[in-house]
Length: 239
Image (tube, rainbow, N blue to C red; front, top):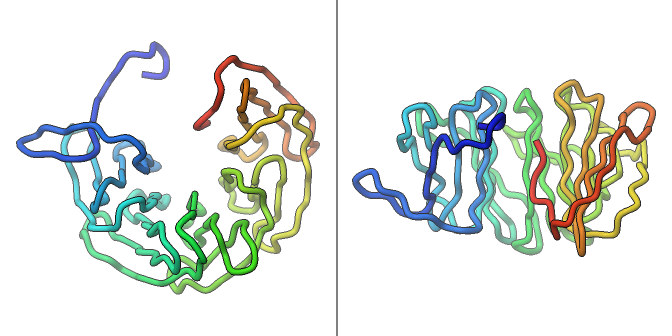
Protein backbone atom coordinates (compact mmCIF):
# COMPACT_ATOMS: atom_id res chain seq x y z
CA UNK A 1 0.00 0.00 0.00
CA UNK A 2 1.65 3.27 -1.12
CA UNK A 3 -0.02 5.31 1.61
CA UNK A 4 1.20 3.30 4.59
CA UNK A 5 3.86 0.91 3.25
CA UNK A 6 1.85 -2.18 4.23
CA UNK A 7 2.53 -5.38 2.28
CA UNK A 8 -0.58 -6.36 0.31
CA UNK A 9 0.57 -9.33 -1.80
CA UNK A 10 3.74 -11.36 -2.16
CA UNK A 11 4.58 -13.38 -5.24
CA UNK A 12 7.73 -15.43 -5.82
CA UNK A 13 8.50 -15.45 -9.53
CA UNK A 14 10.43 -18.60 -10.37
CA UNK A 15 8.71 -21.90 -9.64
CA UNK A 16 5.23 -22.76 -8.51
CA UNK A 17 3.35 -25.90 -7.57
CA UNK A 18 0.24 -26.31 -5.44
CA UNK A 19 0.04 -22.57 -5.04
CA UNK A 20 3.61 -22.18 -3.75
CA UNK A 21 6.06 -19.69 -5.26
CA UNK A 22 9.79 -19.37 -4.67
CA UNK A 23 11.58 -16.07 -5.19
CA UNK A 24 13.96 -15.30 -8.03
CA UNK A 25 16.13 -12.23 -8.58
CA UNK A 26 16.69 -10.38 -11.83
CA UNK A 27 13.31 -10.97 -13.44
CA UNK A 28 11.52 -8.54 -15.73
CA UNK A 29 8.34 -7.37 -13.98
CA UNK A 30 5.66 -4.98 -15.29
CA UNK A 31 2.16 -3.90 -14.22
CA UNK A 32 -0.87 -3.92 -16.46
CA UNK A 33 -2.33 -0.40 -16.96
CA UNK A 34 -5.45 -1.36 -14.98
CA UNK A 35 -3.16 -2.40 -12.06
CA UNK A 36 -4.77 -5.83 -11.79
CA UNK A 37 -2.07 -8.03 -13.34
CA UNK A 38 1.69 -8.51 -13.24
CA UNK A 39 3.76 -10.05 -16.02
CA UNK A 40 7.12 -11.48 -14.95
CA UNK A 41 9.86 -13.13 -16.99
CA UNK A 42 11.71 -15.97 -15.31
CA UNK A 43 13.72 -18.98 -16.54
CA UNK A 44 12.02 -20.32 -19.68
CA UNK A 45 8.61 -18.78 -19.02
CA UNK A 46 6.77 -15.47 -19.02
CA UNK A 47 4.15 -15.65 -16.27
CA UNK A 48 1.17 -13.51 -15.38
CA UNK A 49 -0.34 -13.02 -11.93
CA UNK A 50 -3.83 -11.86 -11.01
CA UNK A 51 -3.34 -9.53 -8.04
CA UNK A 52 -7.00 -9.50 -7.00
CA UNK A 53 -7.33 -13.27 -6.90
CA UNK A 54 -3.71 -13.95 -5.84
CA UNK A 55 -3.54 -16.55 -8.60
CA UNK A 56 -1.42 -17.44 -11.60
CA UNK A 57 -2.73 -16.40 -15.02
CA UNK A 58 -1.69 -17.48 -18.54
CA UNK A 59 1.96 -18.39 -19.20
CA UNK A 60 4.08 -17.91 -22.28
CA UNK A 61 7.25 -19.97 -22.98
CA UNK A 62 10.17 -17.67 -23.72
CA UNK A 63 13.99 -17.74 -23.41
CA UNK A 64 15.50 -16.65 -20.11
CA UNK A 65 16.18 -12.93 -19.77
CA UNK A 66 13.31 -11.72 -21.93
CA UNK A 67 11.40 -8.48 -21.40
CA UNK A 68 7.65 -7.88 -21.41
CA UNK A 69 5.28 -4.93 -21.26
CA UNK A 70 1.48 -4.62 -21.34
CA UNK A 71 -0.33 -2.55 -23.94
CA UNK A 72 -2.88 0.00 -22.71
CA UNK A 73 -5.75 -2.47 -23.13
CA UNK A 74 -4.26 -4.73 -20.39
CA UNK A 75 -4.94 -7.61 -22.78
CA UNK A 76 -1.96 -7.45 -25.15
CA UNK A 77 1.58 -8.19 -23.95
CA UNK A 78 4.71 -7.46 -25.98
CA UNK A 79 7.51 -9.95 -25.23
CA UNK A 80 11.08 -9.38 -26.47
CA UNK A 81 13.85 -11.98 -26.43
CA UNK A 82 17.15 -10.81 -24.92
CA UNK A 83 19.51 -12.01 -27.64
CA UNK A 84 20.94 -11.00 -31.01
CA UNK A 85 18.31 -10.80 -33.77
CA UNK A 86 15.65 -11.02 -31.09
CA UNK A 87 12.06 -12.00 -31.79
CA UNK A 88 9.22 -9.77 -30.63
CA UNK A 89 6.03 -11.64 -29.72
CA UNK A 90 2.66 -9.90 -29.58
CA UNK A 91 0.78 -12.08 -27.12
CA UNK A 92 -2.98 -11.94 -26.48
CA UNK A 93 -3.31 -12.29 -22.72
CA UNK A 94 -7.00 -13.31 -22.69
CA UNK A 95 -6.82 -16.03 -25.36
CA UNK A 96 -3.21 -17.03 -24.54
CA UNK A 97 -2.37 -16.90 -28.24
CA UNK A 98 0.44 -15.23 -30.19
CA UNK A 99 -1.02 -12.68 -32.61
CA UNK A 100 2.19 -11.55 -34.33
CA UNK A 101 5.90 -12.43 -34.35
CA UNK A 102 8.69 -10.39 -35.94
CA UNK A 103 12.47 -10.05 -35.62
CA UNK A 104 14.50 -7.05 -34.48
CA UNK A 105 17.97 -6.85 -36.02
CA UNK A 106 20.24 -6.44 -33.00
CA UNK A 107 23.90 -7.33 -32.62
CA UNK A 108 23.84 -8.53 -29.03
CA UNK A 109 21.70 -9.59 -26.08
CA UNK A 110 21.80 -6.26 -24.26
CA UNK A 111 18.32 -4.99 -25.14
CA UNK A 112 17.67 -3.29 -21.83
CA UNK A 113 14.12 -1.95 -22.13
CA UNK A 114 10.95 -2.05 -24.20
CA UNK A 115 7.92 0.21 -23.95
CA UNK A 116 4.67 0.72 -25.85
CA UNK A 117 2.59 3.77 -26.67
CA UNK A 118 -0.83 3.80 -25.03
CA UNK A 119 -2.61 2.92 -28.27
CA UNK A 120 -0.38 -0.15 -28.61
CA UNK A 121 0.57 0.76 -32.19
CA UNK A 122 4.22 1.59 -31.54
CA UNK A 123 6.93 -0.31 -29.65
CA UNK A 124 10.18 1.33 -28.53
CA UNK A 125 13.27 -0.83 -27.94
CA UNK A 126 16.65 0.12 -26.47
CA UNK A 127 19.53 -2.08 -27.51
CA UNK A 128 22.66 -2.77 -29.53
CA UNK A 129 21.66 -2.11 -33.11
CA UNK A 130 24.04 -2.54 -36.08
CA UNK A 131 26.51 0.35 -36.16
CA UNK A 132 25.01 2.16 -33.17
CA UNK A 133 23.20 1.82 -29.89
CA UNK A 134 20.26 3.91 -28.87
CA UNK A 135 16.52 3.48 -29.19
CA UNK A 136 14.33 2.53 -32.13
CA UNK A 137 10.57 2.45 -32.59
CA UNK A 138 8.64 -0.16 -34.57
CA UNK A 139 5.13 -0.80 -35.80
CA UNK A 140 3.83 -3.29 -33.23
CA UNK A 141 1.93 -5.35 -35.81
CA UNK A 142 4.39 -5.57 -38.71
CA UNK A 143 7.76 -4.85 -37.09
CA UNK A 144 8.43 -2.03 -39.55
CA UNK A 145 11.14 0.36 -38.34
CA UNK A 146 9.58 3.76 -37.70
CA UNK A 147 12.25 5.96 -36.14
CA UNK A 148 15.78 6.03 -34.68
CA UNK A 149 16.80 7.90 -31.51
CA UNK A 150 20.40 8.49 -30.50
CA UNK A 151 19.72 8.22 -26.79
CA UNK A 152 22.32 7.47 -24.15
CA UNK A 153 22.42 4.04 -22.56
CA UNK A 154 19.83 5.01 -19.98
CA UNK A 155 16.29 3.92 -19.35
CA UNK A 156 13.73 5.81 -21.41
CA UNK A 157 10.08 6.79 -21.08
CA UNK A 158 7.26 7.57 -23.51
CA UNK A 159 4.76 10.29 -22.66
CA UNK A 160 1.12 9.29 -22.17
CA UNK A 161 0.13 11.20 -25.28
CA UNK A 162 2.75 9.27 -27.25
CA UNK A 163 4.39 12.37 -28.74
CA UNK A 164 7.56 12.54 -26.62
CA UNK A 165 10.35 10.14 -25.69
CA UNK A 166 12.83 10.91 -22.91
CA UNK A 167 16.21 9.19 -22.58
CA UNK A 168 18.17 10.48 -19.63
CA UNK A 169 17.92 14.27 -19.77
CA UNK A 170 17.22 14.37 -23.50
CA UNK A 171 13.67 14.72 -24.85
CA UNK A 172 12.89 13.66 -28.43
CA UNK A 173 9.96 14.02 -30.79
CA UNK A 174 8.45 10.52 -31.13
CA UNK A 175 7.51 10.96 -34.77
CA UNK A 176 10.76 12.39 -36.14
CA UNK A 177 13.41 11.26 -33.63
CA UNK A 178 14.74 14.81 -33.40
CA UNK A 179 16.01 16.18 -30.10
CA UNK A 180 13.73 18.96 -28.90
CA UNK A 181 15.07 19.66 -25.40
CA UNK A 182 18.15 19.02 -23.25
CA UNK A 183 17.57 19.29 -19.51
CA UNK A 184 20.21 20.13 -16.90
CA UNK A 185 20.99 17.66 -14.14
CA UNK A 186 24.02 18.24 -11.86
CA UNK A 187 24.55 14.74 -10.53
CA UNK A 188 27.22 12.34 -11.71
CA UNK A 189 25.83 8.84 -11.98
CA UNK A 190 24.75 5.85 -13.96
CA UNK A 191 21.60 3.88 -14.68
CA UNK A 192 19.21 6.80 -14.83
CA UNK A 193 15.49 6.09 -14.75
CA UNK A 194 12.87 8.45 -16.15
CA UNK A 195 9.12 8.81 -15.92
CA UNK A 196 6.54 11.24 -17.37
CA UNK A 197 3.59 12.40 -15.31
CA UNK A 198 0.19 11.13 -16.54
CA UNK A 199 -0.56 14.49 -18.18
CA UNK A 200 2.90 14.54 -19.88
CA UNK A 201 3.69 17.95 -18.37
CA UNK A 202 6.39 16.80 -15.94
CA UNK A 203 9.42 14.53 -16.30
CA UNK A 204 11.12 12.90 -13.32
CA UNK A 205 14.59 11.38 -13.44
CA UNK A 206 16.66 9.51 -10.89
CA UNK A 207 20.38 8.71 -11.12
CA UNK A 208 22.90 7.20 -8.76
CA UNK A 209 26.58 6.35 -8.32
CA UNK A 210 28.18 7.20 -4.96
CA UNK A 211 24.93 8.92 -4.04
CA UNK A 212 21.59 9.34 -5.78
CA UNK A 213 19.35 12.22 -6.77
CA UNK A 214 15.87 12.77 -8.16
CA UNK A 215 14.87 15.77 -10.23
CA UNK A 216 11.54 16.84 -11.75
CA UNK A 217 11.20 19.26 -14.68
CA UNK A 218 8.43 21.12 -16.42
CA UNK A 219 8.64 19.57 -19.90
CA UNK A 220 7.51 22.62 -21.88
CA UNK A 221 9.76 25.20 -20.23
CA UNK A 222 12.60 22.94 -19.10
CA UNK A 223 12.41 24.51 -15.64
CA UNK A 224 13.52 22.28 -12.76
CA UNK A 225 10.65 22.00 -10.26
CA UNK A 226 12.23 19.66 -7.71
CA UNK A 227 15.67 18.30 -6.78
CA UNK A 228 16.76 16.12 -3.89
CA UNK A 229 19.82 14.00 -3.13
CA UNK A 230 19.75 10.66 -1.31
CA UNK A 231 22.37 8.45 0.34
CA UNK A 232 21.29 5.40 -1.65
CA UNK A 233 23.79 4.29 -4.30
CA UNK A 234 21.18 3.73 -7.02
CA UNK A 235 17.57 4.35 -8.01
CA UNK A 236 15.92 1.46 -9.84
CA UNK A 237 12.52 2.84 -10.75
CA UNK A 238 10.11 5.76 -10.73
CA UNK A 239 6.31 5.79 -11.11
